[in-house]
Amino acid sequence: MRDKAKYTDEELIVLFQKGEERAYLELVHRYKDRLTNFVFRFVGSREMAEDIVQDTFLKLYTSSHMYKEIARFSTWIYTIAGNLAKTELRKRKRRKIYSIHDMGIDEKEFEIPSDTYNPERETRTAYQEKEIQTAISRLPEQFKTAIILRDIQELSYEEISKIVGVPVGTVKSRINRGRQKLQELLKELKDK
Amino acid sequence: MDCYSFSKYLTDYLDNQLKLPQRREVESHMRECPVCQGKVEDMKNLLNALHMLQKVSASDSFEAELLEKIHIYQNNLEHSHTFRTFFFNHIRTFSAVAAVILVIVSTLVIWQSYHPRAGNLPAGMNSAPVMSSMGSSSSSPRQEPATNPVNPPPKTTPMALTDSLNNEMVPDDTFNLDFLKNRIQLVNEQR
Image 1: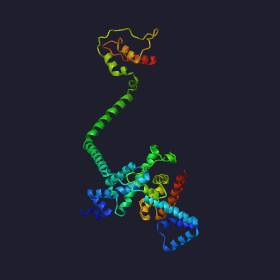
Image 2 (image 1 turned 90 degrees about the vertical axis):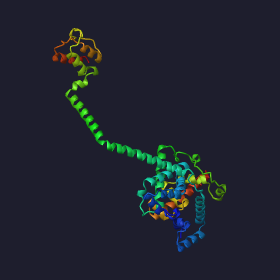
Image 3 (image 1 turned 60 degrees about the vertical axis):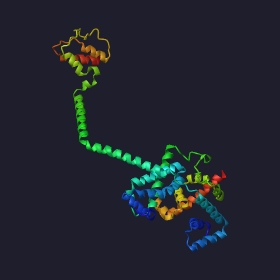
Image 4 (image 1 turned 135 degrees about the vertical axis):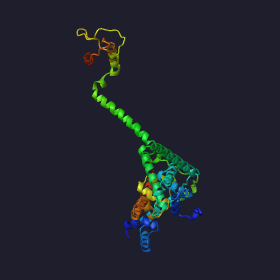
């Protein structure tokens, strides 16, 4: 295998399908942080996020044959992670182990990763990180996905469209409505 | 451009997705409408805050934990494969055992359907011990028959009835079928 950095994601997954385990490890290395950030914003817990991302990579390991070269690898892996995160959230809500909606706004606690916490950054922005995380968690699922992928992960409309499986126009509409809803929620939180 | 049209273009404007003529129209409306201008400012603040959110990275132990999960998965796969291999290698033996069990169960069911009374008798009164005690030349002492219409025998438990029946006065060398039928009928009536 030549220098790993020279391979595209799509080439790496094809190599892994042929049995090259180092290609798998390179894909894990490239995507573990991006996916952890995405899933963390979705579920609000770092531990749960890591668990889900590990399950995503385990799925990649066991079902790599499901990947077809017509799709971009990034959209494929984001779709798997997003689906697993949604499933996990629904499961937890059903079991009443972790229910955001059962709690009042003041009771809601989200982890704020403290290792790189920067108070200066908080003062430079209009909102506190904790408020934003709380507001994101209260967004309807489809708006939440669109906002995280666009405004936090900074993916293009086209990529989001492929990940969530809806036309670009629908993605734009969800982003627009999601942002407005997020603003309303943040205003509510500030007024409390 | 009115405020309604402006709100439709807002996302594309903020994401730099508008073509130049549309962008000019939006900016021209913003200059005339302080409400819409305020909306743009609010939205820019929100997007700025979202972009500034700190990036959460995977922990240092992430890859080690993942490899552990893969290892467990492979082990489970191996075990299930071993079980499947064992099952398919011994499928003839399992089939033979299943067939024998099926034959035994079927025989029992058929036998019971031909001897419904035997199935209803108390455990101690099943045919084998009764028949054997009656047919054998046992050394149990002869007793008076219990068929006494004036003084019916006291009510006893099924086991006691069995014992009494086993000790009945029946000639050792003559098996009286009618007598046995009468006794069973009597026992059922007492029950």
